[in-house]
Image (cartoon, rainbow, N blue to C red; front, side):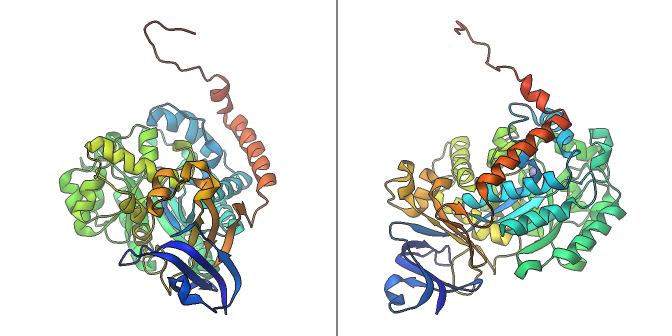
Length: 472
Ligand SMILES: [Zn+2]
């Protein structure tokens, strides 16, 4: 007797053979995928619940390897500005205002947005918090929704000269003490759904000693490190001012920080030699195409990274530079970005970007043996994609093409994390979404007033561009 049997669907397994089984079935008991095969193989099998997914496709849950969930309340405040201005006028003034209610609301909102787009695992990269205890409120948000999550404990111990406000900086001792507390409380908790990593904010915002200490602590407690690297040329130059002329990547290499348990975020401006070194050390990459386009940071050399043997995953980045947590949207944007910049329609494919968002995403966070594909023995993290819920995705000739090029969150009817159904019939199960969204709108409006960012919106000009023969 299985707990759940999904049958008659296209099963896009992303297993080693990359099998797509049709008409296929997946059987789940507890938190685990018990069996995968042709629907006919399950004749007579009993299950507490059977989902007849005829006409639909089943995919492994998507893995979002980089976001900042607190930004879920900041959507649209910093649009159409360069990164430095976006950070100083919209994002940091809000970040210093966050208290428990806001951070919890923000985490739940971001996780719900992620879930609706088939995301089952999310890595939340906290900035340093202005007051203690906000990491705990974020974890409560993960728990309330039920998503699989990594909390990246932020670390910024310097960076005053680059405009980092005092509330967002901390001493290494305070950072590591809080990291250890969070690690002891939550790492491996909730049936292993929660993990705690170290997340130094940047290379220019940290000292050599702090970065080396992060490496030593991560090795000691066997957890991961994630850090922004070379998002813009400015990051590289600023690192040079603090780290004896080295680029941010060069400094991490020099301090012995790099390794298979390190996830570098962005890497838009790595040199070919740095890509070679990155592949040699087996670091992992989080590619955030939407955010890189939104902030005009540039195009990460993903095809070259893949050729070099690097594991590349997909992140949305925070909702202040995206402005959603929609991973299906990110899939399409990622593929199209690399096609156009290389003028090569085969530079990235629907299949490759799906791998990046599933199995490669799982490997990027050290969970390749647990999640990222639909195989017996793996955790039951998956979603059902029904093309018939929206005209945009009919007809479905091939499930991977449909998901990447004509799919949307509106097609995601069922989402399962750790064997628990969290989205059912397109509706969130664990949260009263209608009431919650109304509250999130009120809380974000109050926060914007307090942070002074509401004024940015009230005074937002109609930013048309100069144009000959301008007409109203
Ligand atoms: Zn980021």
